[in-house]
Image 1 (cartoon, rainbow, N blue to C red):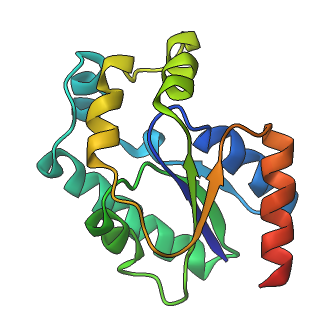
Image 2 (cartoon, rainbow, N blue to C red):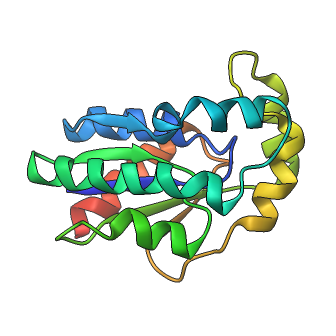
Amino acid sequence: MILIVFGVSGTGKSTIGYQLAQQLHLPFYDGDDFHPQSNIQKMKNGNPLNDQDRQPWLASLAQHISDWENEKGAVLACSALKEGYRQTLASLCKTNIQWVLLNGSRELLLERLNSRNDHFFDPQLLDSQLDTLELPDYGWTIDIQKSPSEIINKLLKLLSKD
């Protein structure tokens, strides 16, 4: 089973993804850990990534997803903002990916981003991510106003129905 928890920065992808992986006894991976240093530096400098910056990163993640699928599965936290990005991520997968979009208001996201002190993402880039986000018509969309434990419980209930 491959689950991808996605959305803009500040939605709690890493927190939710990690906790969900723990509950499902699956390995957890954070897409941010796979960015090349050039992408990290660009974001630290307050510059949004473009499709050219993202393509090698997405292709690398697609290969990892295929590898994880051949093992026992995994949970990946990844922005996956555009449909084309999600298609690249799924391109080498033989089974369906369960997509989980974490979504919330701009105000809540800014509040969360401004409270971070150990992340390379510049909060000023939030608007560029919100502008880039293409909402899917598949998967599950989860409101991030709930607590992480409430979100995890909801996801576990949804997974038990599948």
